[in-house]
Length: 109
Image 1 (spheres, rainbow, N blue to C red):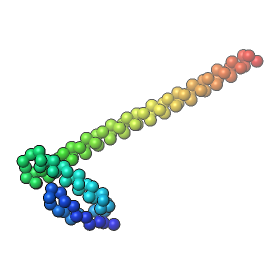
Image 2: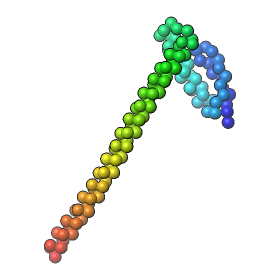
Image 3: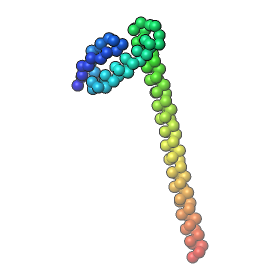
Image 4: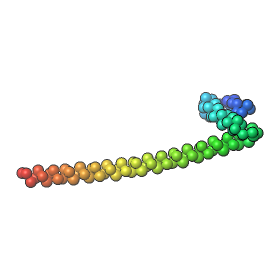
């Protein structure tokens, strides 16, 4: 279901239609508004330029987060592979231990 939501970004109202909940859409718009306002406070630029700069800042954060996510996935994959390797080594050590215990028992008998 599509929801119609009115949001304000940098003093300008926008009527949005989104499949997400109105609360989520407002949350996203509030974030964008905050980013645009930061740019407007830090630089003497037009609202349009502030929107573009804010978009670049958001995209930069997005790509850095994607890179961090990929690094975490790689680390997780490596950890799972190491865990599987260690489980196999443990299983082999248990088999060897059982084999040696059996041999020791046979020598005692």
